[in-house]
Image (cartoon, rainbow, N blue to C red; front, side):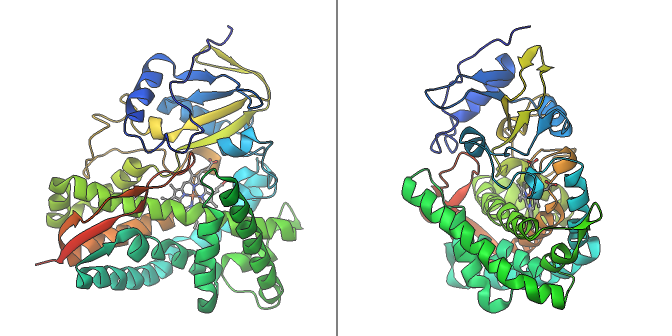
Length: 404
Ligand code: HEM
């Protein structure tokens, strides 16, 4: 069957579109009427598929044989010629190489490793939340949410404490592409600086290996051969880019959601047993990664639509995590929601490797909020990130009191 062609009611590439609450209606319309829609080419920009229903996303995520990640997994990259790290950085590598490299990295996220990092995460979160409570409030993003993920990643990579501020600045610059040419240039420079920084660590980690991610990669083998330097560096970068801003957006989004739903905040304070389901609902509610992209390696059919070899296919987590067929009353923030099999951390072979760490960070933050904070409210305007790939708050001024 020839694919029905539908006009997407909003510009998915425009970073300003994603924070708009009216987008919810547009997603609902797409899910109902055009779950596999085609966004027409526009000038030099190629067309692409827009998939919005949960079950279809899950199907595509699992099908790494026919839907490749190697050309890139973000719409912006796919539309501009592909990802130069394809085949060398885990998230944009297909099996079988993907499975072999993933095995090398897996050890860094074992339950034992997570328990160790949880201690550092708890100590840091405790102090940062205490400082905000002592001050009567602050910007929750800058004062708490931005500090923890990179600290945890630096522990994973064993970045010396003296270099951690540099890493935070570079990471923010690397992810700060808001669509302007200046930001794109600054982001590219920062990305290069991050790779150079890790290149500087390699000789030491080869001579005196530790249990950290850089040592695992630098001394690891995939398919019987050592990883190339480029693979090692790009995978260090993958951990930083994958784990920093995403977790920050979920943490800050959690606090905003609790402020906007005071009855849920009261529930959480009264019932420690809610913590596990609360972490999952925070992940579903915030969905920091709006979409992922794939490229068809062969002709295939999805819901009667003909996807051609070479077509770009985009998977909208933002929509799938509000799919009424899977989540009863999906626009309700409900900390007790179970089951809650959201797609926030992806699905299938590329399922987020850092998921256990993201969960530790969110759980510890919710615990510390419960222990230390009483009243919680906004004290100024919230600012939102401008990006078509990541969504969430970039500034969250709060006022709070100590727990009674
Ligand atoms: C993969 C989201 C935290 C490292 C992914 C994918 C998603 C995702 C959606 C799948 C990508 C794809 O299928 O193309 C998130 C979110 C997080 C988070 C929303 C926080 C709330 C982390 C953390 C780390 C991390 C803390 C590491 C410290 C990775 C890596 C991959 C990945 C290495 C590639 C896995 C693979 O391709 O096999 N993440 N992530 N992520 N994530 Fe995360």
